[in-house]
Length: 509
Image (tube, rainbow, N blue to C red):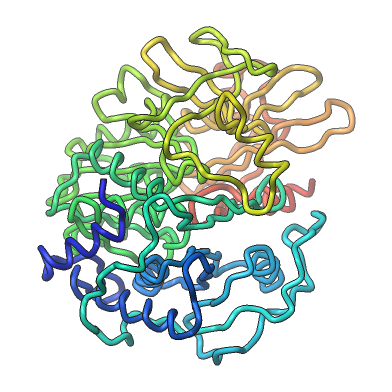
């Protein structure tokens, strides 16, 4: 299997004029993109970047980020994508943790400007022990549209498939972020496997508007590129008719996003909609409700839905539920990618029978190498039985997986186990809400209780008593929300996940 770098250079030579990336009016062919990446790689080398050095990015424009990603690899460096929306102290903590030689930005900060003062910490109540980084990285401006198109790079100094190529930081929603270390083979291998399952070709084009530096954004771009397709990137969430209009205008054959995107597209549609080019939809990042899947079939019958489940620790996607399995395997996230194995185990690590619930363990060639400078955490996660995901679920006899949620999503309410995911499914099944989220809140008597947040689908006030009455027909008494909090909009991350800390604040917990 060619590496992602080899594949880009091959496309640049064999299909130089094929479009690769379109974003905010700027278009890049395979050759033009590769030439710009080579120019930036040469700039990095001139700045002192050597093989194995780290190059961090604070880039939010799709062309700037993806060109910088390949430039780092062409220079033989390790890419460290940083979240542009993070507060300055959090960025400083990540820089101190990863210690890159160069930081690529979109602003006009001069080279050798020094590091951001590392006085803060990720998570207000989380201890940090990031190493001192007084000198900081050299800062370079990296704007793709301004880069000269020098001759195509040879790739002679590029990162080899088995070498460390990227450090992806987890979101830190359950603690201090961890730096997930991946080889180029794992990153490209994930994209190639998903591209094959989607049946992508050179005429396919996907629309994404989650940030490019998120794992999902990187995966979508590479998945289209490996089979010669293209990507359209737009900043900011698009929903409903606005999203469908963008897909039609840009000639996209697919969309990749969070369940919230799909909910807000299909809920307002009453009749079938025929789309001229759209043929597939990829949903990942959070649980997709059964009612949303059913509604998609009714209003967009020509669109094939691929439901996916992934982890940063496997360089992106892990399981895919194909459209042909949606009806008979409703609620499943599908089966693992080729060469990957998922087992379900009890608290002692012993496998449980098919159909029983337990923690998911993963084995296969896409697994991370380790967590950055975290040998104890790495040893606890990468066990002899595979990677402990922290996710819980079950598997059937045919290998299809159902996710019950993260370890934190299974709470004990007065001694009874309660699944946050099951409550969210029941709320969506009522057909009253355009978006829902459920979190666990501390309770002095019961330990934890579920609190539900809902967005009215028709804009009318939410009648809590009526909602609870309908939920009693779908859930056991122990799973009923302790409170239902109506909101105009649920706060979500760029990848579509609900922001738990903000929801707790809104609930007054």
